[in-house]
Amino acid sequence: MRTEENINKTPMKSNHLREIITEEEFLKLAHNAAIEVLRISLFLEDVKKEQKVFNKKLFYVIASVSRDLEDFLDDYGAKNNRTWHFFRELIASARNFGFIAFLVEHIEKSHTGPKEQKLFKEYFEKTNEIKSYFNQVLLHIFKLIREEARKLKISFPPKGLGEMYYYDIPSNKTLPQNLEEGEAKNEREKIIKICSEYINTIKEFEELECNCFYSANELRKIVPQKINEEKIRRFELFIHNLESVYDTYVKGTAIESEDARLNQLRTQISITLHLLEIARGLVHFFERHEKINELLEIAIPNNNVLNCAVNWALYYANQIMETSRVLADELLKEYTSIDSIELPVPKELGFHLRPSTLVAKVVNHYGSDVYMIVGEDRFDAKSILSITWAGGKIAREKIEKVKFVGDKRVLKDLEILASVNYGEDHMGKDQPLPKELSYLR
Image 1: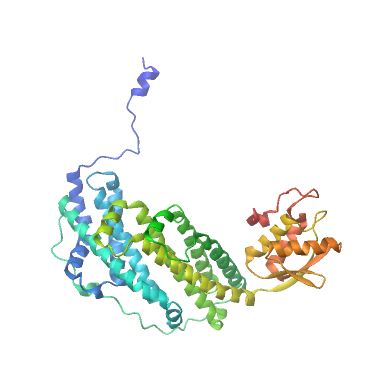
Image 2: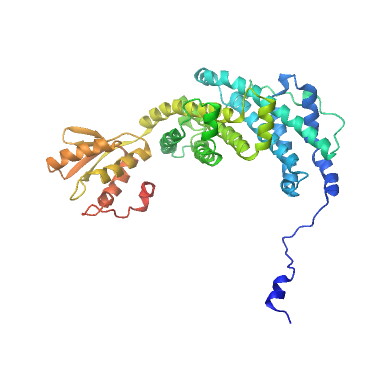
């Protein structure tokens, strides 16, 4: 008879169980999977003093073949195997730094015309030092890969590919830009959306305090406590969404061809995005690959990963965003449709702190200028203090309605807010806000 105790001791079979392969059997498979990475490794060993080979094409190849090998190792669970886990970590590091170095070159070659070069002169001067560091990092990681591959007895290909295979393709020429302009797709509204959301993202980014340089000791305190992969990824997603909206609705339209500032803003948004990608990759490496990071700090003492992540990538992302903020604000003012609306004053208690705060939040959400008109006076509706001052005048003169002038989008939401007495009942207690104002919660 099968008791409950016996049942619990009975081995269970699972469809999710995988067959265990011996390390000797896996080594035979690894010989073929590692060929391309080891080929690059031998190539870098031969030409490590030739700076001209470090270019966008090479970095793309490094990131690509390393990703393929990393996927192969993960498929066989190498990250949880005592023999293979360090080799897998090295390959992941090569993929990470290959992609980072690729992005640095991509920014320079694909996004920076004469105007940007002049605007970001300091960035490019500093970046030359960073590029040299990344080159040294890749050389050292591939040195470690060769050493570990020999320990594991992985077969090496006879020789790395010749230099010419990795020479970059010049990109200082372009085909005639003669594609017909696309039809209008509410692009003015999208431009307003891009500018206002970008300004709001810049304001949030200020909380990371990346507007100064930090010492080595300070960097260790703020990463990952204050600045970490998760926070950087959040901003990266915001900026990537804005770039996607631009490319879908504004790129290639007549309005873009007529206003050069739009493409300039798109360029600055794209540079910011890539710098955030780089920073995330560096912080990810610092958080996840402690052993290799320690080896790099010993081998390359003149720089380190955290310095590149915070004092370079995030610092210049912040600098570029601050420059972009001026341009985005200028475009927002020009493309915004201005209107006016008369709204009731909050019943019973007037514009005290709570309704004033909600009004200011609505206005700041869109980033455009809106003013409250009370008699002959004009108050900035972005400012809680300004609105409460207006509230005093309204109470003294027993005014029941006020006028708001500014962005139509803001006025529409203020009208909704006024319809629920600015989010409070007659006793001054909170009441639910309509779903259209969910961003205020």
